Length: 272
Image (cartoon, rainbow, N blue to C red; front, side, top):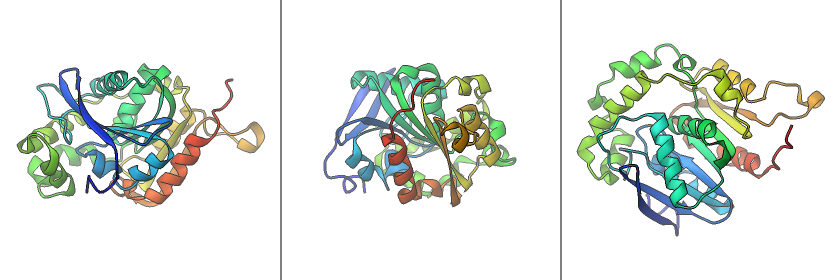
């Protein structure tokens, strides 16, 4: 699957904050950084539309600590650290400014980058983002906490991990670390979100794990929620994909491609 999805791309490993971090570079032109979801790989998060994205510009995809081809190390998973890992990789690749597209865990990493390293972010696309755990539906956290690592044995994510991970036997360790990441997530403040100046496209499935009310709150904090005919379009946009769950969101390749490419290709809004 991996070798078939693109005819030619460059891949490698970089020494990043104690990690041997895997990355791929597809296409040429304006850089777009892809940040995958929890327990997934570049392929399982973005495989359905990465080739099309790379026809539009340069795509830089990476696999975070313990995910895919990037081996785990003796360190907890935190959004702060994963954001710093991504920034260090981009520094080594000499990327000074880029667009960012994060899905689920990757959306939280992208948000952290936009808050702490605003100068590197041109535009931001976040799919299935909750900026606090209160943004999730009741029961989601309890369900995840009750989940046993072996419950995901045989899943698409576990099979993808087994195919490419340096240490496939660490699957259960990764799940335990992901559960701790979610359990100990403190979130960001509304002021943190409001301070983001990068134009942002916020995407959710209408049956996602994130409540639509929460996503509308994010949209408003980013300048949305106005009558565009009266005051002009805001710098940020909101997309709710019909008939779409958290897991199936990344299968909506036609919708995502049209929305994301239109958003990224549009002129930057004027300051002020």
